[in-house]
Every structure is written in C-alpha cells, then in structure tokens.
Image (cartoon, rainbow, N blue to C red; front, side):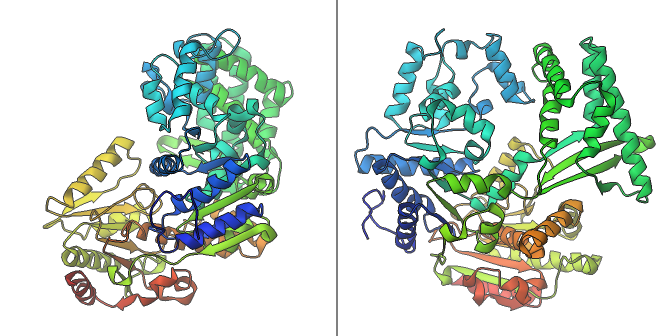
Length: 633
C-alpha cells in the first residue's frame, strides 16, 4: 500500500492496516473507531490519509486531543508531511484557550472566567494588544497581517505564535487564521462546545459536513462532553454573590440572593431530615428553579439579564470577581430540560453547625450533544489505546452503527520485552480491607522495588487506600515520591522531574499515585524512566448517587448499565495506567496487577488479549523470582 503523505520512510507493523481502514472510512463518509496500543504510531497513521483526502476534496481536518504533548506530536507530523510533499501553502493552526495565549502582564494573577474578562476588556478598550490587532473597520492591522502571514507560511505551535505576536493579540491571530486553515489542532471543546466553535468559526461559514475529525485519546471524549453541560450552584457562592451586590449598591439583587441562600439551606436540610440525615439526595429540575422564582418578582430570564448587567460592573471593579456571570451561566445550564441528566443536592457539614449546600446537575448522556454532531460530520476517526469494548463507545456517543467501522490492532511490542504478573492473594475489595491486607500489598510493592533495580510507579484506587498501604512501606534504599491531593501544576512538574532524575542518579524512585489523577494517564514516561508499573486494586468509581444514576440510565437506554457505567471504565483506567510502562518498541518493563479479581473471567476477558500470558503469583517471593528472571534476560 502506498500513501504519499505518510511522513516516514518505513511503515510500522500495524500502521498499514490502520492507514487503509482510515482511508476507506473517510472515502465512504463513515466513522471509524480504532483501538491501537501505544507505539503503533496512531498520529501519523491517521493524519496522513485524512489530510490527503481533505486537501483533494476541500475539507477541513480537525485533530483534537486533551493533551498538550499530543499537540506537539501532531505538529511535528504535519511539518514532516509538509516538507516531504512540498505543501508550502498548507495552513495549520494550533488552538489553545484564550487565557494561555494572553500577553497581559496581569494574566498570571487571574483566576476567574477568563472568557468574560477578555470580552469586557475588549469592549472597554482596555486591551492594547486587541486594539493593535484590528482597525476601526474590524479588519486586521498591517502588523497583524504581517504576523498572520508568518503563521500561514509556517507550522507554529501556539507558544511560538504567542512569542511572534509582540504587539498584537496572538489568540485573535490564531482564530482569524483558523477560519481559512486546512488543519486545526485543538481540544474537543473547539468542536463539541457550540459556544467556542461559533466564536472561532461563525464568520467562516464552515459547516460540519466539511470537517474530517480525528479524536485522539478518544476514551476521554464522553466525559469531556458531559462536563460541558454539567454544573453546580453553591449556597456559599450565592451568599458571596449577595455580598457583592450589596457592595455595588444593588439592594434588589442583594436581597434576592440572600433569600436564595437561606431557602436553599432550609430546603436541603428539610429534605435531608426526611431522608434520615442523608447528605446526598436527588431532586427534580424545578427544585432550584422554584426557589429562584420565589425570591424574585419577574421571569427568571429577565432576572438573569439584570444579573449580567451588574456582572459588567463587578468585573470592572475586580477582574478576578465574576460571581454574577457565573451564576447566570450556571442557571442557564440548569434550565436545560432533557433526558439524560441527574439533578441532586449535596450537604457539606462543617464545625459549629455550619454547612453548605450544593445543587448539582450532571450530564449522564454525552450522546445528547455528540449524536447530532457525528451525524453531520463528513467523517470521524476516534482512536485510543483503551477504546474497547467498541459497543460502549458507539452506544454512549450516539454513533450510527451502520456507518461506523471498528478496528482493533495488536500491540507492536515484542512479548519478550514485557512481563505481566497478577497477584492472587491481595485485593482492594471493601470487605477484604484490613491492616493485614494493607501490609501484604506493601510487601508486594517492596518486592517489586527490590527486583526491578530501577524506577517503579504504583497506582492506587484512592488516596485513602494509598495512605493505608504506604504506612507499611519503609523508605530504605529508594526515594519515595507521593502524589498529593490538589497539587499545583508546578508541584506536579517538580515531582515528575524528581522521579525522572531518580532513573539515572540512584537511589531509584518509587512514584505513588492515584488512578485517574495526574500521573496514571496523560503523562509520558519515555525510555527507562519507569521499568515496573504496579496497579493496586481495580479503580471502580466510588458508589454514590452519580454512579448509581449512570448505571440506571445506561441500563434503561442500552440494557448494559453495570458494564457501561461501572466495569468497563474501571478496567480501561487500569490499562491506561499500565501503559505508563512501555512507550516505545525498545522499552522493557513489567506490569503487576495487585488484585485477585483480575483473575476472574468477567474482568480478565476485558484485559488486552496480549496479556493472556500473564503469570499468577501467590507471594512476594514468587513475584521477585519472576521479575529477577525477566530483568536478568
């Protein structure tokens, strides 16, 4: 098979099949789901055929991902394709959020809703970068045109465009260029959030039927889309909003918000008492809307207009304070009436009888939004190392089964380069948790440290479980690095760099983290940074009102609630975490599953087929023996 746009001299094992399947799907105006383990080269295998078709048929290619590192991989791939095929007129735009592109000195101190702040700054004429970008006729200035010409003539990252734009707004340069670009690299929100899509592309008359989508790390798509519609209205924040209204001399709004605050606390406490002090309970959509209506003397929409008008004043007084705008946005989300939503309240009790109440709206069904978009796109390629089982993705994203192909590719790694071990005498199951079980789990981890002679990463199902196990892990001859709750970006970078340093300057490191947090996915550990990964337990979601509602909803819609809402997501998290170990064909590493339930057929059948040669061990001694033999080779 020949693909002139493929940027490398040789096509890896698995890539040829990948490229052909993508070509066929795009040619036939279909979707394709590709489950492809790390190392196959998904980015080049998807972009090459998609771009070739897009340029020949006047389509626009969207490469969307949640990870900034994958922006760089896509950009590098496109640079190689551009050079190989002399595509001097290929226009590529790397889109990131406004806040990350802003050049104002004060942006480092900003903590609110940046989109609203930016709009108000432009409207008030207070942003010099924006003023130097457009003329009075809203055409680009001479300097802005010069920068845009550079962007069109090269393939730049968003950071490089920001550096180039010394006097003008880099975000406006990017969005202006994007309207005529051949390729957009961005986040899922640039397509699936209508407000963001319209803000960028409304002036270009771009239609969905002219877009070819490549969704990278597509196992994240459903949850990202859910977050667009989900929202929280907090009594504590309503009280703060009332105080802001009072400080701005608007007594009407101040009184209304004070009444809302009181009524939300009274009503949630009343319902909690009826439910025998249950601090988490479902409500209907009218619960919050009725409280608001009882506190105002006009329709809710008219009230929200007043709120937003005062919001303009609030931001002018303090650019970091946007309580009024946030309230209006949250209530508009709350007002959406459709199936597939959960409305509930949570009481947070503090000392001295103080408590806060949160009214939450959770989107359970991403298909509410994605179904329509996928049906209108020219074609879409959804790819990930954890996209199976395909039936779940097709169902919850609302894809047309008749127009959706599925491809599962085997791992390209030589079997002799990796070792899979399952321990059959430990478990994170609630009824088996005890001091002895925590101690036994710690023993396995210490055994892995001893036998690996290199860095190991250990991922736990929760912070609490991690703390209980690490109590029995005595730091001796290695450097223990522990992920904490609510770490800042800088703290995470420091922890990563410490761990990386341990891989080549002893003592070796043990990185302890939580599955689904910062390090179990979305972070690359290339080369020899990690030699062994331990997965402690099965990372099931905590059983709460949201989990239960999701299971019930999926059961009602697809008759697979327990699978789609509980089991499959947990096993996929395990596979993602295990993937931190082997990132290239030359890597050597071991994956250790510390939970006997991985041996049960209903879980083991969901693990990658390439893991069928997993070795079962019943003690630390047996595990060390297996690892010693593996690493000695």
